[in-house]
Image 1 (cartoon, rainbow, N blue to C red):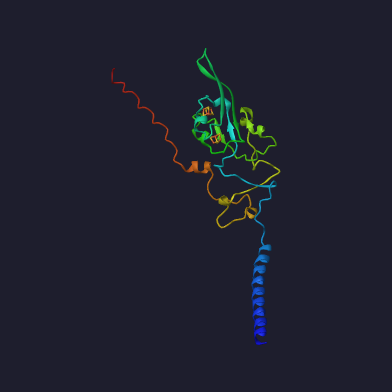
Image 2: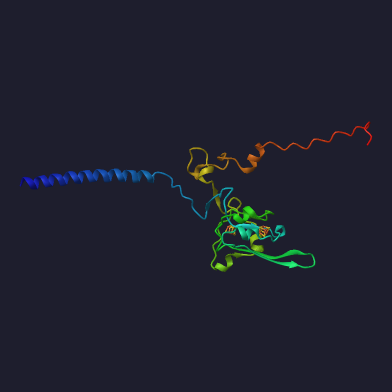
Length: 210
Ligand code: SF4
Ligand code: SF4
């Protein structure tokens, strides 16, 4: 009899302890319901990619010299540089250039090493397509202007965490007028010392006869 009563007492104490822990847990859970969700509501809201974001590659055909450096530095030799040698001018003639974004890993090596800067990385990342062959961009597709989160009137652009003011973690509550953390590349350029114009050559001495 005494053993049974002890078991009942232990059970009641355990149940009361468990109920207390569950209540504490639920209190924390319900406390989270009072906060505003820090969720980016894509596609109506989009984060602004950082300045060094490696999105879709942009290409300028008129700058390309068909040197194929981009092919050699690419981990998978991906860019296709289609050129022919013009025997009369003894120069390469570029016919077409293409990059297959279904294969590209967006490492940026080609952009880094292109000697004429005709390649650049854009902030465009929405490249989804129904057909994988349509991801093979030719020089026309590579040369079109990239989409921009900030210039799309249907999108509310939000700052990434590192660009929010100090102590702020939710981009929704930060108005656009608020100064952003960190400086833009053009603001950094303004702080750099300006190059001095070359000093004018001293006038020649009229007494000296050469
Ligand atoms: S970004 Fe990288 S993988 Fe893509 S084409 Fe350039 S070098 Fe190749
Ligand atoms: S490295 Fe630049 S210039 Fe040379 S072939 Fe590639 S895109 Fe053209």
